[in-house]
Structures are given as C-alpha cells and as structure tokens.
Image (tube, rainbow, N blue to C red; front, side, top):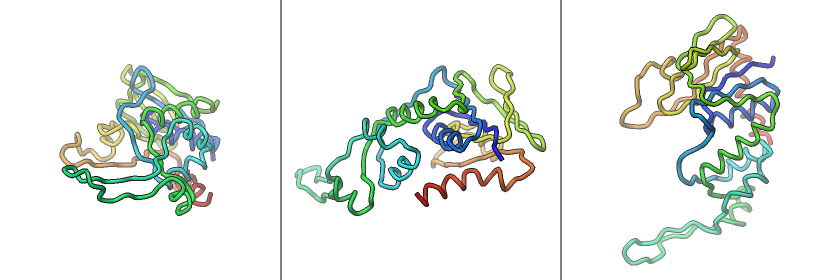
Length: 210
C-alpha cells in the first residue's frame, strides 16, 4: 500500500528518507523550516558501508564528483612529528571491503540528495514550513505549521534535528542537554500498523541484499 508521507526536516536524514521512499513510489512531502534548503557543518567521513547504500540509491557518480578518496589515514606524534600509524586506504579499502573510503563536505552530500529528490515528481520539497506539532486519527496524521497551515498524510517521519518537535511530542523529554541523545521517531495512523512500519525495513533489506 502506497503511503502519503510527511517528513519534518530537510537535512541529510530527511532527504535520504524522502529519496528512498520516493523511489519506492510513495508520495512524499518534505517540510523544511528554513527559507531555503541547505546544510551547515564541516567534512564527514564516508565508510565503505555508506558507499553500498549510495550505490543502491544510484548516487555513486554524483558522490564521486564531490568526494575525496585519501590513499591512507595516518597519525603523527604532535611533538616529534614522528609517524605513529598509517592505515592504507584507496585500492586497499576497495579490495578489502568492495567499496572505497572517502571524505566529503557535508553541504556537498546534502546537495546531491537534494538534487536527486528534486528529480522525483512524487517528492515535494517545501521551505519555510516549520512543524509545530502533529495530531492523528485512525488513518491520518496532520501536522500544524508555524503559520497554522495544516498538512495531512498517512505517515510522519521526524527528521527535524536535535530539538525535534516530533520527538518531543512522542518522548516528552524536553530539550536535550549534556550527553547527546539520538532518536528515530515515526508517527503513523494507518490501520495496518505492520505495513506502515515495514516501509523502512524493506528499504534497509534492499540495501543489505544489493
């Protein structure tokens, strides 16, 4: 059964979810609170397991154009500058794991996902749409935006960051303090609970089997 999916948050996580679900034929609306889609932060590491997922999503060429593949990873003594350890990567990583090890600027990874989502006619990308809270009935979920607009769907994914309104509604643990906590939260209203929750499981299984 195809779902009408709402995703609160248009960062890397939200866009990745939108891309997978959109490719499966679901109707997706990404609700981003900022006035434009963008990503902040510095570089991130991409391990071989990530490249298997990127291959599944058809993003290998786009990532290759903006990622860097270091030939090795090393540590040096801060005082003597003596090499402490060096781990070969490059062809060695490909031979060992079947996929490379790379590094990428966070904004470039976000751009690749944004472009891929924008190419899908069933994925709608909306900005200036901050989700304040949600309500649900037996078969629908409704989110209320900062301007009192109501958007309805059958499945809601909270990808709205560390101070997630969706997580707060489910867990009610207040603003995060001290040690970081991470949640994957889904709210749904489908009568068939297992089918709604299995959407993500099917995507993960497809990646593992690829």
